Image (cartoon, rainbow, N blue to C red; front, side):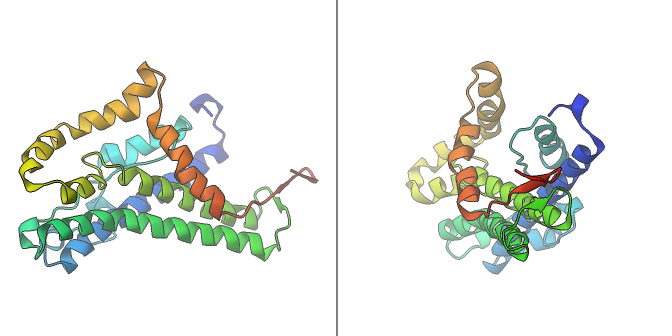
Length: 239
């Protein structure tokens, strides 16, 4: 699907998925802040980040332009928001609590992904598994649940990759000896460059897509394993 071949319906579907992306990353960041707050740190609350207002969380490039670009080019849709601030000095057990705060965001996406799967099953079971006609109510409910599940499973697996600044890097920080932490933070300072190389440069320059391959054996397989599979009527013919 390219920009020149997009119909009005295609644009509407992409817009709906972008709304789902934004809502999902807002939930992700909100849960980071809530976890930090429950563990004794008020930084996110004082910064006004314990809110569902997307304007408090969104990053213009990572939350809007990046997922839009990936949606229009047919790639997997993932995004990021402005990191929720927290002060680890306020935690009772710094290493443990930093890890819990980091994992709270991906956990939110995993839960939302499961909710999306449940919506798909509702659409499937309401019609007793019978084929669905394109663009009827069951089709839209199923497609919405599928989009919620796909986007959130992608966000979950993307964020648990153990590469800074992704949340999975906190697992490394929680496990490595204290004396190696300065090295970890030096590597972390180049993390965005490393991520850009892996996500964009390798596919474009070397025709290698490690992130796409990773999604194919993680989010794609999980979604396929959990989802019901509707068949569709097109012009009266079941497909």
